[in-house]
Length: 244
Image (cartoon, rainbow, N blue to C red; front, side, top):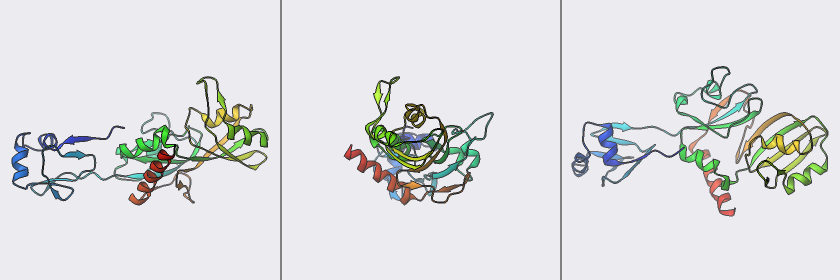
């Protein structure tokens, strides 16, 4: 999502009875505060979460919201659906209607989903060059061998896109289960990687995204992330982006 920004004079004209030209006088009279500080220019940017006050009245006070959900099977990674429950139906938050999904999961895939109303945050996480690690627990129809581990580390060729996946870490847990960590999000990527071996994925559960893990969060439950947690994810994205 594109970040919402506006010049101060345009924002004032759209959210009050004052015109574009009036804004200069309002600034001179020290009647406008941006995040608690006196405005000084009509060209100052008002972003999505900038707190704007005019004559002591708040014109904008939207707060960023970051949520983590443990999505169950049979729930749609969408904000609206006429046939099935959506991830928003499971969220209990007064601003939930403002949220969008960061990294969708398939209908039958379970696990960690992030939601936010912060477009800049979700866009940063979703950029391919960010290479944010995502870890899944996978249950397979056929036995898994060390051949899988070597192939995933080398990369699996996808003929449709004419590309090879980036190296992925596969840890064999048992004869039919494994833990997979990858930094991409191609269409049905996990299922297609195992499909290279004609091995059907019976269950797929995302346990972590970057520094976040479910950490005992019960299925269908959600919790709000702190600002510090959300910033830690942005920091990790920045570091990995520089390393790429």
